[in-house]
Length: 154
Length: 458
Image (cartoon, rainbow over all chains, first blue to last red; front, top):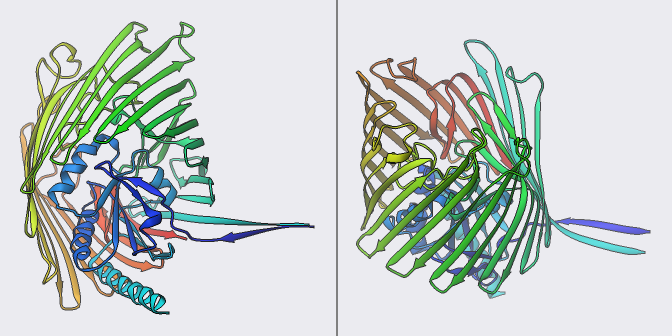
């Protein structure tokens, strides 16, 4: 008799990514240290830009890692880099050149964002981002710090 | 007896829309989404589209499945995939959710990486899916097969890439006739300076006139970055580079108009971004001209498109207030004369427990002999963290405009966030174009009636 078990899990989906400035980020060393926020955005999406402007300011006061994945395509690479410098985004920006990540994450609308805890589990997926989502995001991030702190104390 | 445990990751996403037109009471239903199942190094994913409306004799079901095997050094892709080579000069088969344009290659792709060297070989049939405003249409170009190879070498701050693509078309009168396109790309990045140069050539047979045809193209981009500013300069020259709708070279101007899609274009632009304490300013200008010797569409050295714009962003974090203002001046001459002056103000503010997002846009159009003003005012009230109401109004002083037959487009939309998605109900008129609602943007066709939209991810 043979038994086949399927265990459905949610794990951290990224191993490494090359940023628009040619830096390679190894997520195995990052997501275990602090929560990771992955945001998919495009230049035409005004809500995405508002979201990332806010995330940029939040990053100064809260300890989490941000990677913004651009979906404008390789044709607009230079314009994307110019835009991110103009907005003084301090987080890493990567280009999803052949839309592989977009398909793997199942992105159907922008902005779409994912918050992962330090175990690599998905805490929340945001589709769209309003000022109310920002408040939810801060609450979630706070609760993740409490969890991490209590785990470390134990 | 053996027991096998498989750790799998499942992801399911769906976006369904039901439209009811108020004038004809005709209905439209569409649902698109993706399902992916991943087990360590093997993934099975499929995009799907379902559509039912009066334009189809029967309900349309479309599946785009793929099987991906990944190891540390290699990746094998079997099924439907996207690919861009040399920033679009050689190939541009992409997934564009803004315009609902899904350009696939159906075939096989193998990628390998050794240290800083990356190689990709692929072969397949181009297969596109596009929403044309009323219905999805597919282009199953089984008469063509594309085969390509691309390489990339990443050295500290230098990237050298090459690409070659060959297209065979089997319905040619001359057997074994083919066209090919190839090129070289160089990227240099230092802290304060970035340089990008792509060059491509094309040769082969014109599939319409069956004559020998040659083409070439150059795209140059330079970026100077300092703490106080970032300056981007882009130049392009494309002469008969267009490759049967398979490539789409990059556009050097912000408006993203490439009048002859790489057949006869030359142009350039500059963009100056000035970050400051609580915001940013972006100033830019650019123009696209037709080439003297390849002017199919435009007169000799005709100016096809010209733009000047300035945009400012300012945030006040203490009161959670954002304001964005902009001015755009666009001029298009030949074959249609359009002159657009556009001023817009967008602001978001939290007032007590009520969050308000406001967008006001004023466009002044001059088309041939007619002039008119157009205004947009969108307000979103966030009632609770999960519920918002949006009031949308758009008004034009004249309905002489080439494509508009209305003057007033009012609408109301109620959106409710659910776990992993949202539900929204819209009633009113939509002029079409980019619509942002409930924190999300998408391109919409003209509409008058009721819409129910459900998005959900599991």
